[in-house]
Length: 511
Picture 1 (cartoon, helix red, strand yellow):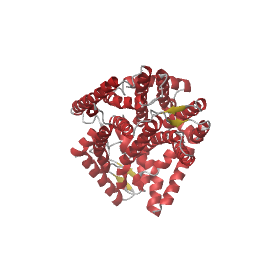
Picture 2: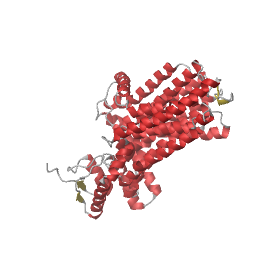
Picture 3: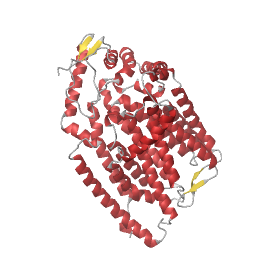
Picture 4: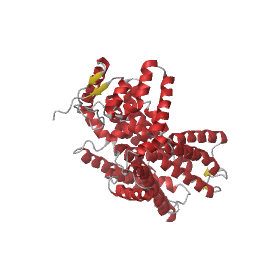
């Protein structure tokens, strides 16, 4: 049966190639990406400082000043605002292309790191198995992202949501790695990195912050009660040792997180902003959040592609869990906890505004849902494997499972290719890659870029009062919003400050 074995190294290499190929159109489209809306409002001061001083240090100082000012007057998300003030076009208009590189790159790094720690360090799996699972998760979330523009092409929205969420994953990965029996020096480094990420998460959006707090406190409590437990791998050697002081070590980044989140929520600016929106009571927000989780799980997130990729992962999840001696107890409890975690992600937006209309909010909740979906799929498989003794110890059973895994993956691959083909043909914008590829080959992206370059040239040559031509080409991924014919509109005022003009408008719509 040697020739029938499912070669995880080969599968991981193929999946990595597919992932890179699917990322190329997404990244290339970034070269036609330009700032808009809050990109201008949060970075107008740093832009002017750069033009006047060309000092990187002065720009960073102004970014900190912008964060401190907004903390007092508008919102408490101090780390997000600091990054918002440093949007790439501050340095040069052409630097904005880096936005999709930053957002997809940080998400990819964080998912790979977290999955590697869980699969390799905690379950005794292999690097190819970890790579396969990471790539399947990334293909799912990147291609099926709810609001693709807010996720990858609008810097202000993505740096406020995608970046803190990625730091949340990095925080968890570093903390779990530090607790996995590392040496003292390495443990200190990992806990320091986890604490830094914790501050960045705590000072970011409230969705990532609240989820991080729930997960962090839950982990500390779990470690306190399991502080003398060991989780051996398939070779019988302990791959995780939860020492007596493990929960105390975990408290370090969790305390940084809780303090940062408290500073964030206590901002005077939050009280001012609350007066402009109508939210819900805390109790009603929690109840509505539970309902939203069920509604989105069975409707918006029940995309056939999501479930197909989860099903594709089952043979590899099986290979991981069957070699671990962890018993995977109480899967219903894990599923219920996962449901509560996703529900908690809805609560901040529901409490503050009474809705979850913003695509950038739904993006990171969707990523959280997918991560927990894969986790629960693996957990249930692990429970079934060890509860019913299906770990393939008997030679005949092991051979049957090996052959079936190989045919399963081949069939699933062809089914996926067929399904994607019939999905993209009538709707090219269904997946992020197909949408980006369509905008590139149709010439939409190039036309949009030419119009934006023409605007920049007008701004460079014009006086204090500027009337810009309307944007005629509006690609789905690249175009987010535009200024208005009203000079005193917030978006017009922000753009005027950014370019140092008295007023910037567009002609009134002739229709």
